[in-house]
Amino acid sequence: MRPKIELHLHLEGGAPPAFIRGIAREKGVDLSSIFRHDGGYAYKDFGHFLKVYEAATSVLTRPEDYGRLTRAVLEESAANGVVYSEAFLSPDFCGGGDVGAWREYLSAIAETARKAEADLGITLRGIVTCIRHFGPEKAKTIARCAAETKGDFLNGFGIAGDEMVGKPRDFRWAFDCAREAGLRLTAHAGEWGGADSVRDAIRDLAVERIGHGVQAIDDPALVDDIAEAGITLECCPGSNVFLGVYPDWASHPIEKLREKGVKVTVSTDDPPFFHTTMRTEYDRLSATFGWDETVFEEIEANALAAAFCDEETRARIAKTLKKGT
Ligand SMILES: [Zn+2]
Image (cartoon, rainbow, N blue to C red; front, top):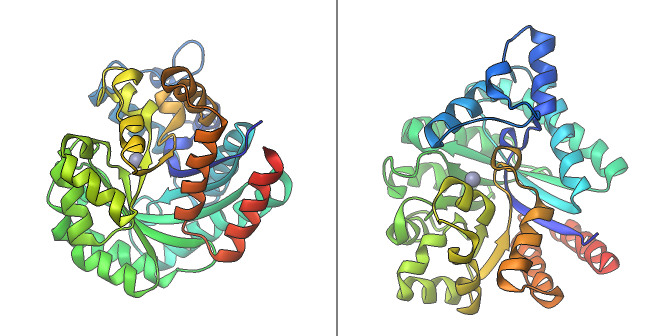
């Protein structure tokens, strides 16, 4: 199978339904209403999806739960050919922003990742994300957590959550704090917020990657700027189609952005919730846009170049990619 790199994956959003069902059973929590008969997550619309997501992740309450979650997510990613992955981690959900508690969660995640690298052949790195709708003050606390724990495993800082709340500039302090600590930066923008939200994130937060960013397509000058600046877009087409940002794969702008010289990459966002995998994304891109070996090689080169890991890891992953194709 083709080796793949994934840059945009929320750790909790990668939780396989069977794993969540198992933890819920152990803890005596009844979550039967959020699963379909075939075992997948069940919901009617976006509002309901958020409730199901919240209910599923509510059973993850201790560092050891996150250790087991990491293993379950990495097994699924490795089964789809992913050899290098970056996961968004939220100190808000792992210790409520307390640095001491966060350290325990982080060490459970990083320790599991080290073991998985040895026996599954997948490398994981972490990106701390603050949650936009929790506000700029909370984001400062989360940035401090990230700055204090920057290291071999934790390389990046970003922002997720409701894009329609507040402005990127409100979070400048948090991003400056993370940058000064040596963390690399990304921000969710242009999924729901329009082209302006992408422009604002680039200008006000000085990020080198944008999570989604696809709505930049509505502003040709911005697309040129992104291409010229070499900013990488973490595109998640299956997620966008599932949530209705675009009505179908054919209308997704990933190919148009690529044609205009933007560095695009492919990720799954919250794969089991959107009934997707990295393999499915690749298959759909190939079927919809005729992407062949050459294009996928270009996509993987973009992802490798934009990965937040150290150079030694990058060189090692480059070798793995070469070996596998
Ligand atoms: Zn995301």
